[in-house]
Length: 67
Image 1 (cartoon, one colour):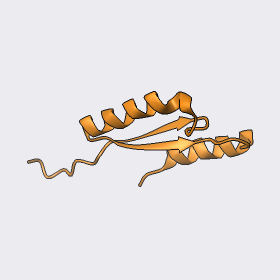
Image 2: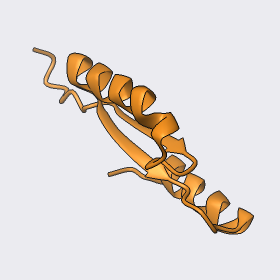
Image 3: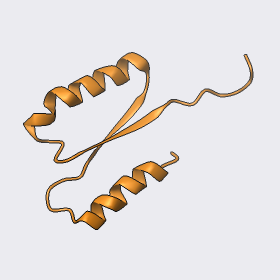
Image 4: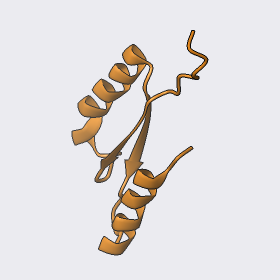
């Protein structure tokens, strides 16, 4: 043991309207891959009606998230 704590890998997946049927298979695959590899996945929904600025902030929040 090196004494270095292994941190879980975190991945954010940003999709437009993640509740839409078109994402069902994709999100199932993402969740299974996360389970298989021990990666923490955060699915981020841009949602309907978000302005370009709001989407920009949402994506940047994910990029800068250190938790």
